[in-house]
Length: 195
Ligand SMILES: CC(C)(COP(=O)(O)OP(=O)(O)OC[C@H]1O[C@@H](n2cnc3c(N)ncnc32)[C@H](O)[C@@H]1OP(=O)(O)O)[C@@H](O)C(=O)NCCC(=O)NCCS
Image (cartoon, rainbow, N blue to C red; front, side):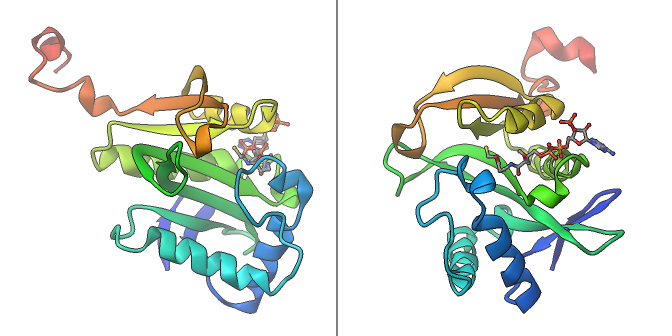
């Protein structure tokens, strides 16, 4: 099912088709991808576990009416799935308990780095979330992950430094993008002149 489209990409649900499962395994078995992810069970070492990962994503996002997801980024021109873009509530210091802070994230296969796909996909996901009324969206990045911090900056996110509020208290570089609807709030008299 298509979730969003952009100029070069289709963002859609990952499926249980063999090609999708093989791609999930190929991405999430790679150390150059998983070294930056704080997710139990990674890297995958058994292709059969790709289906479990898909099931875990489906269960995680169920009950939110499609607002959140772990979506496949498909390149329109080639049909290749470049990787994953995700939107979800950040897990708190106790990982089992989600917070009210929303996270956008990106995990691409190395064969799809360097084309602007992560930024293009995340921009669409963040724009939809903010347009729907979210106050802000966060990106959290392991210290040293320069490629990921560059994506956050390309999105126009503000770097607010290291925080320990999420993911079991692990220290993460934190970026935030705030929705413009706050600036146009007519309840804030000082901003009325903006129209
Ligand atoms: C983080 C990650 C998604 C970044 O991927 P990326 O391809 O570098 O990011 P973008 O989609 O923003 O692409 C930007 C690059 O594409 C290039 N590019 C080429 N064509 C482009 C186009 N048409 N539009 C925009 N950028 C383009 C840019 O110049 C830039 O390359 P550079 O960094 O060499 O200057 C990728 O490294 C990754 O998946 N890493 C492993 C998982 C991970 O760390 N995830 C984040 C966890 S917090």
